[in-house]
Image (cartoon, rainbow, N blue to C red; front, side, top):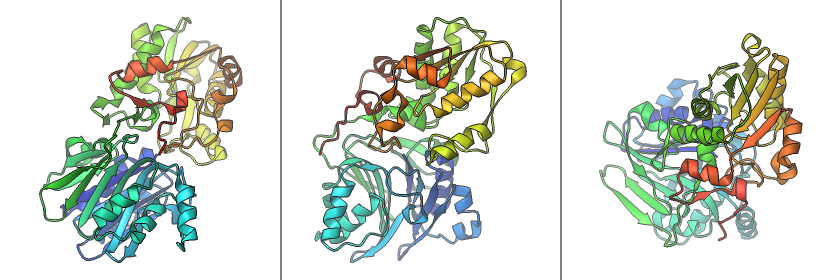
Length: 448
């Protein structure tokens, strides 16, 4: 899970890319970067850290002049947490300068890489994204458009790509549309694509539509029109359910659905099967808040913000190591003993992945005086690693893949534990379409 943005035909392209990445910081905090074309060459600034850290020198950002820009926030699912593995990736080939940014995961990365290395390719990063650069460079097709399309035929997995040349922007989404990508219109007449619509809200861009599953959009500098191509005849949309559960910001609209309203619905459905007596509901901030509202409203019990979050600490799940996740829980969350002492509470969170964060939260609440803690989770048990862009690479890291519900309850220290079922999650999101539910049902539907 990363964030990508592409901007074209705007004199403020680098600024719009910067603010869009800032709005989508929640999708990746390890590295950030922006590439800008002035029509003759592409310039790139990238670095480790959050957007405002990488671009702390605003003069450097202002020096990225041009009307075409792409940007990226990194959350590592493939490659290492290093500057080399930050994006966009820049290269010069026979067709000129190009820059590429990617959200998702190519499951046949190693197969492609081994083949390219055997043919003489030299890699500088560990990212699957670099495979595409090599495939484009080695293609014999006459145009960048044809080379890019040919390269995508070798790529298996979930992806949203933004590719910039000196005067064109290419945008493509995989045939299943696993990761979100939206198209908007800027106030100055230019176009923007971004992983989430919350980026549009910040810069007052007008939402046009979602990029379709299997679609490529091609924009040219100086042209008000863009080309749309459907690359796959068997396109079959399956947006990732975990976008609604955790990843996306609640103020984003994904495939026409409000993330906030869906999370409230998850809480409502979770509450309907809750049987414990409680004094009030406590959300785990901020990821459990929307579901907790729906939960409390349905039960007609108070909601208390009894856990205070330090907002200067980032998200724990997308931290790359367990040690850093553990530390951030302590730094981020502080329970209020005056509110909790002697109370029976329902704690609402979006998910349990490894179980370590939930365990620490319950321990903090016990120490603050809560007498009973009922933990209710607004998604099903996560039993399978997601290979399409989420950092759950092994069964060993997933607590529900190794323990039943009773054992998970004991491990985290809750008095009771409840989850949504897969069918209840589908009901929350709307049963009129298919979703990527592999974290819950193990259906690895991307085969070739």
